Amino acid sequence: MDRLEHMLSIQKSLNDAIKDKRHLHDIDAQTWMQKYTLAMLSEMAELLDEVNFKWWKNEKPLNEPALKEELVDILHFFLSMCLAAGLDAEEMYRIYLKKNEENFARQEGRSNKPGYAVTP
Image (cartoon, rainbow, N blue to C red; front, side, top):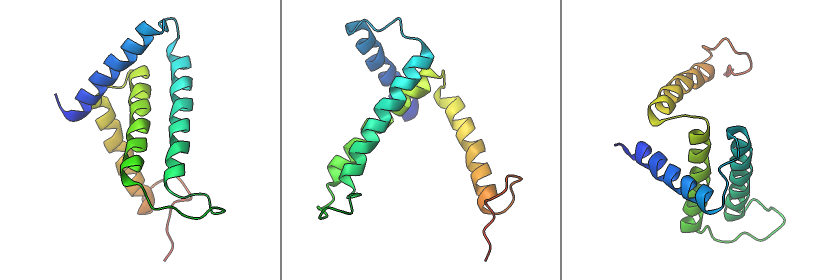
């Protein structure tokens, strides 16, 4: 089992435990996706607080451990979203490679999608 598969597996275990303990088994996949998206947005707001986005306040030193923890909190909800969508590690990897190739093509002006070509 690779690391991504392991993270998906233990995230599923955590999700199942939460659903059992809080009696949440009657929620459909679409609603879970909404809930996970909102939770991830909340964690992203916490991440913003760690990176001094408030230009109207004095900057504080970057708390790298807190920054990394917020990123992992976001990852937890992202993994939950992948599970709710039925996305496993192998499919995620395949889709990622395809999308990454398209993103490079866009940046290199080789895409049929307009608006990405960089002019020198």
